Image (cartoon, rainbow, N blue to C red; front, side, top):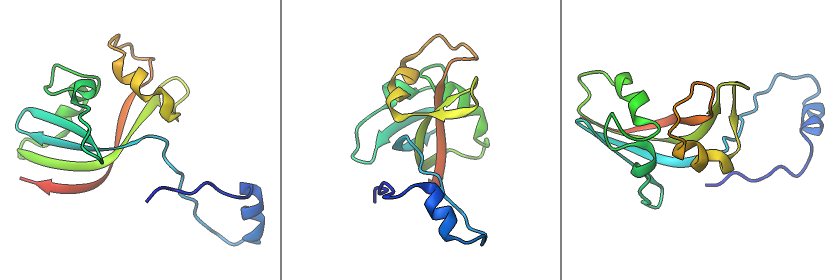
Length: 129
């Protein structure tokens, strides 16, 4: 289900709480993606099955994300499917950037430390081994 845009200012919502504690969950401005890993091969796709592996990398040495996340998987993980949100992280401002910058960041092959880069935020583990 897609998030609805608020109809009033955040300040008005805070005022309505009358000093009581509350939690706000930030809407992430990215693209819903599934990550499939089988052995040393990766596959990335949208909710509708559009293949984005060419952007993020089929193997450890390819793409804008796979080379950086491969080492995060425990050696006992052979097959895994993760559901999450692909975002753009800006290391300079230390915040996520708008969705419109995702493809540009994913295609940037310069690998400079200060350039915005894809960041995969995992919501659910759908399958393991």
